[in-house]
Length: 121
Image (tube, rainbow, N blue to C red; front, side, top):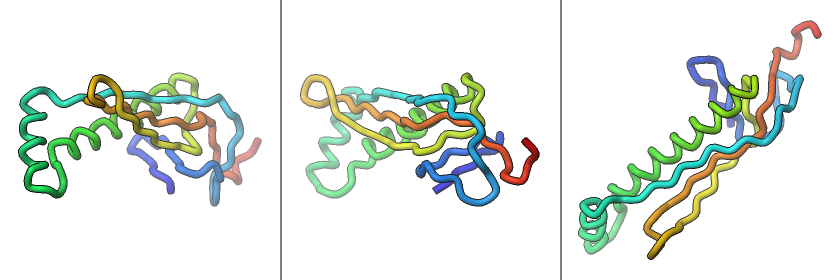
C-alpha cells in the first residue's frame, strides 16, 4: 500500500516498488517513536466506558494520534537523510510502565531515494 503526501513524499508498506518508480539509493533504516499515556481524567473516563463494554474511544483516539505522530517522525528522519520515500514500513506497539499504563508506537522503514523509472540516469 502506498501513501503519497501533499509534499510528494511516498510511504510504502511493502519493500517492492511497482509501476513508475525505482529505487536509486538506499539511505538506511529509520524509526519514529512516540510514547503516550492517558492522564488521570482520561483513565477515569476509560474505566467508565469499560464498565459498559465495547470500544474505549478515549484510548482509540490517543492511539490513532500516536500512530500518525510516529509516522511523521519517521518521515522527518528520512527527509533529513535526503530521502523522498520510505519503503517496507512497519508499525509496532507495546505497552510499558507501571500497570502497562503507557503505549509506545514505532514506525520503522527504509529511507530511499526514488526516481521515475523512465528518467535518465
